[in-house]
Length: 142
Image (cartoon, rainbow, N blue to C red; front, side):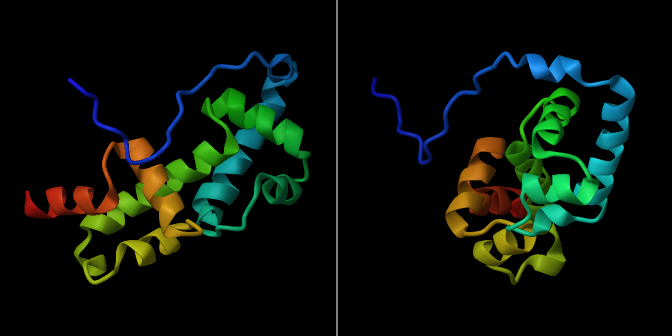
């Protein structure tokens, strides 16, 4: 039996050994972790499609490499995955919220911070295993 082709090219996560992750002082990493949560999540900077790890590092007064090491060690993922996770959580909420029923998938994707429809669909599929419109249809009907 032939396996069904996936609609998006998603590669398996590969663990990389990065020694610099273990050189971070715990107190500083904890402080930076809290500040990352404040800026990226509480202030909803992830909704800006142009907000980069470099800009976050600048806003936090640190360098991008150190920021990356803290995100990897404290969140267990890279910057892009962290930001996309926040965006997908927003999208999931909007897809089933009656206040957003009149919005298109493209509009919801843009409101959540995705630069275009393709990146929204690919990230959503990677996280949820289905396209946003399928998720919406399944949850609205139940």
